[in-house]
Image (cartoon, rainbow over all chains, first blue to last red; front, side, top):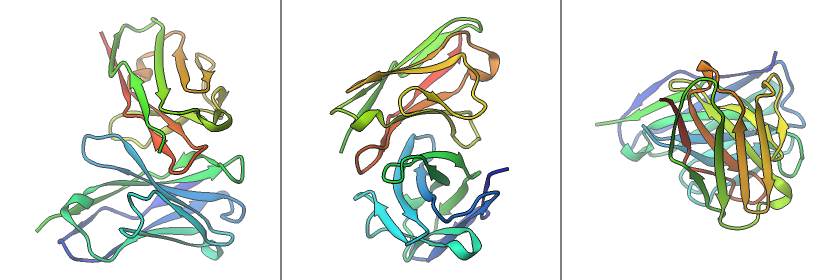
Length: 121
Length: 108
């Protein structure tokens, strides 16, 4: 069974750093993409970016470029989303999802359960 | 970027009724790379439709997608109690990939 299991909820202060993870089970990261999607409280879905763990090719939404770093380690089927200096506006649920289908334009099929990040002083 | 506008914002229907959800793009969606997701409160989104009209694994055939160019539709032929949720369209043909703002299907 394909599963994406994300790390647990985090409570951080503004200015702190954070790295959350997404662990894949039942499939190989080789040959697939892993995407990240943000959902702010009570709001819709926002596409942040996507990585191809096979060669670390990464595409960012310009709105998030420079604000986060997406990375992956295909040897352990894990992907990561990290911040160097959190802001209160980063408070949100973050989902990872597997990208499949067209290798140049994958669609997101299986999703992780989400990681809630709360940034508050 | 391609802006996706979903309508209506809220759809109030009874179980057994037909639901028709619209997604309009600000420019043509490349090769029909349009997906639909269902999100039940407190849960992760679930893929329903990809490539405009292909049903994802284990999705019942009461869900269907259609459209082309800038106009796309998700149809639920007979609403079941578990179908009351928020639905998002998503284009993945052009970067940055974008989502619509969502349509809430609520019980009338």
